[in-house]
Length: 152
Image (cartoon, rainbow, N blue to C red; front, top):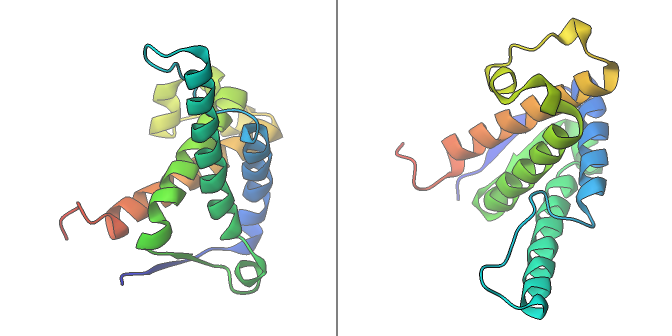
Protein backbone atom coordinates (compact mmCIF):
# COMPACT_ATOMS: atom_id res chain seq x y z
CA UNK A 1 0.00 0.00 0.00
CA UNK A 2 1.32 3.41 -0.96
CA UNK A 3 2.00 5.71 1.97
CA UNK A 4 3.09 9.34 2.06
CA UNK A 5 4.80 10.80 5.09
CA UNK A 6 4.88 14.57 5.22
CA UNK A 7 7.53 16.02 7.52
CA UNK A 8 6.37 19.35 8.95
CA UNK A 9 8.08 22.04 10.98
CA UNK A 10 6.34 21.89 14.34
CA UNK A 11 6.97 25.54 15.15
CA UNK A 12 5.34 26.60 11.89
CA UNK A 13 2.41 24.19 12.07
CA UNK A 14 1.42 24.60 15.75
CA UNK A 15 -0.19 28.06 15.30
CA UNK A 16 -2.02 26.79 12.22
CA UNK A 17 -3.45 23.92 14.21
CA UNK A 18 -5.04 26.43 16.58
CA UNK A 19 -6.90 28.04 13.67
CA UNK A 20 -7.81 24.63 12.22
CA UNK A 21 -9.08 23.34 15.56
CA UNK A 22 -11.15 26.48 16.07
CA UNK A 23 -12.76 26.05 12.64
CA UNK A 24 -13.31 22.33 13.31
CA UNK A 25 -15.02 23.15 16.61
CA UNK A 26 -17.27 25.64 14.79
CA UNK A 27 -18.24 22.89 12.36
CA UNK A 28 -19.19 20.32 14.99
CA UNK A 29 -22.88 21.39 15.14
CA UNK A 30 -23.34 22.42 11.49
CA UNK A 31 -22.38 21.52 7.95
CA UNK A 32 -19.64 23.42 6.16
CA UNK A 33 -22.16 24.17 3.41
CA UNK A 34 -25.88 24.51 3.87
CA UNK A 35 -27.80 21.90 1.93
CA UNK A 36 -31.35 21.28 0.90
CA UNK A 37 -32.64 17.75 0.47
CA UNK A 38 -34.16 17.47 -2.98
CA UNK A 39 -37.95 17.13 -2.89
CA UNK A 40 -37.98 15.67 0.60
CA UNK A 41 -40.24 15.94 3.58
CA UNK A 42 -38.91 17.58 6.73
CA UNK A 43 -38.25 14.31 8.56
CA UNK A 44 -36.25 12.90 5.65
CA UNK A 45 -34.36 16.18 5.18
CA UNK A 46 -33.48 16.34 8.89
CA UNK A 47 -32.25 12.74 8.87
CA UNK A 48 -30.23 13.34 5.72
CA UNK A 49 -28.58 16.43 7.19
CA UNK A 50 -27.78 14.56 10.40
CA UNK A 51 -26.08 11.81 8.38
CA UNK A 52 -24.05 14.38 6.47
CA UNK A 53 -23.08 16.11 9.71
CA UNK A 54 -22.05 12.81 11.30
CA UNK A 55 -19.90 12.03 8.26
CA UNK A 56 -18.34 15.49 8.32
CA UNK A 57 -17.54 15.16 12.04
CA UNK A 58 -16.04 11.69 11.50
CA UNK A 59 -13.84 13.02 8.70
CA UNK A 60 -12.68 15.99 10.76
CA UNK A 61 -12.03 13.70 13.71
CA UNK A 62 -9.85 11.46 11.53
CA UNK A 63 -7.95 14.50 10.29
CA UNK A 64 -7.36 15.94 13.76
CA UNK A 65 -6.26 12.51 15.00
CA UNK A 66 -3.25 12.79 12.67
CA UNK A 67 -1.92 15.49 15.00
CA UNK A 68 -1.40 13.17 17.96
CA UNK A 69 1.49 12.84 20.40
CA UNK A 70 3.51 10.93 17.80
CA UNK A 71 3.14 13.84 15.39
CA UNK A 72 4.40 16.27 18.03
CA UNK A 73 7.37 13.96 18.61
CA UNK A 74 8.31 13.30 14.98
CA UNK A 75 6.64 16.08 12.99
CA UNK A 76 5.52 13.42 10.50
CA UNK A 77 2.00 13.37 9.10
CA UNK A 78 1.22 9.85 7.78
CA UNK A 79 -1.16 9.68 4.82
CA UNK A 80 -2.29 6.58 2.99
CA UNK A 81 -5.22 5.42 0.85
CA UNK A 82 -7.18 4.33 3.93
CA UNK A 83 -7.42 7.88 5.28
CA UNK A 84 -6.92 10.03 2.20
CA UNK A 85 -10.58 10.55 1.23
CA UNK A 86 -11.61 11.48 4.76
CA UNK A 87 -8.66 13.86 5.03
CA UNK A 88 -9.56 15.50 1.70
CA UNK A 89 -13.15 16.03 2.83
CA UNK A 90 -12.07 17.33 6.24
CA UNK A 91 -9.62 19.77 4.68
CA UNK A 92 -12.34 21.01 2.34
CA UNK A 93 -14.82 21.52 5.19
CA UNK A 94 -12.29 23.36 7.36
CA UNK A 95 -11.18 25.52 4.44
CA UNK A 96 -14.80 26.48 3.76
CA UNK A 97 -15.23 27.49 7.40
CA UNK A 98 -11.98 29.48 7.44
CA UNK A 99 -13.12 31.21 4.27
CA UNK A 100 -16.57 32.05 5.63
CA UNK A 101 -15.37 33.21 9.04
CA UNK A 102 -12.10 35.00 8.25
CA UNK A 103 -11.23 35.19 4.56
CA UNK A 104 -14.31 36.11 2.53
CA UNK A 105 -13.42 39.85 2.49
CA UNK A 106 -10.20 39.03 0.62
CA UNK A 107 -12.06 37.64 -2.39
CA UNK A 108 -11.76 34.22 -3.97
CA UNK A 109 -9.36 35.28 -6.71
CA UNK A 110 -6.86 36.71 -4.22
CA UNK A 111 -7.12 33.63 -2.03
CA UNK A 112 -6.53 31.18 -4.85
CA UNK A 113 -3.63 33.18 -6.28
CA UNK A 114 -2.09 33.73 -2.86
CA UNK A 115 -1.78 37.45 -3.60
CA UNK A 116 -3.09 38.81 -0.34
CA UNK A 117 -1.84 41.77 1.70
CA UNK A 118 -0.31 39.76 4.58
CA UNK A 119 1.25 42.82 6.21
CA UNK A 120 -2.12 44.55 6.37
CA UNK A 121 -4.02 41.60 7.84
CA UNK A 122 -4.86 41.32 11.53
CA UNK A 123 -3.19 38.34 13.20
CA UNK A 124 -6.29 36.06 13.35
CA UNK A 125 -6.92 36.56 9.63
CA UNK A 126 -3.25 35.99 8.79
CA UNK A 127 -3.26 32.73 10.79
CA UNK A 128 -6.52 31.66 9.09
CA UNK A 129 -4.99 32.37 5.68
CA UNK A 130 -1.88 30.35 6.51
CA UNK A 131 -4.06 27.46 7.69
CA UNK A 132 -6.13 27.75 4.51
CA UNK A 133 -2.99 27.51 2.35
CA UNK A 134 -1.61 24.64 4.46
CA UNK A 135 -4.84 22.65 4.00
CA UNK A 136 -4.88 23.35 0.26
CA UNK A 137 -1.29 22.11 -0.03
CA UNK A 138 -2.16 18.98 1.93
CA UNK A 139 -5.09 18.34 -0.40
CA UNK A 140 -2.81 18.73 -3.43
CA UNK A 141 -0.31 16.25 -1.97
CA UNK A 142 -3.03 13.69 -1.37
CA UNK A 143 -4.47 14.06 -4.86
CA UNK A 144 -1.02 13.86 -6.48
CA UNK A 145 0.28 10.89 -4.52
CA UNK A 146 -2.67 8.89 -3.22
CA UNK A 147 -5.52 9.32 -5.71
CA UNK A 148 -5.74 6.11 -7.72
CA UNK A 149 -7.47 7.90 -10.59
CA UNK A 150 -4.44 10.13 -11.23
CA UNK A 151 -1.94 8.70 -13.68
CA UNK A 152 1.53 8.21 -12.31
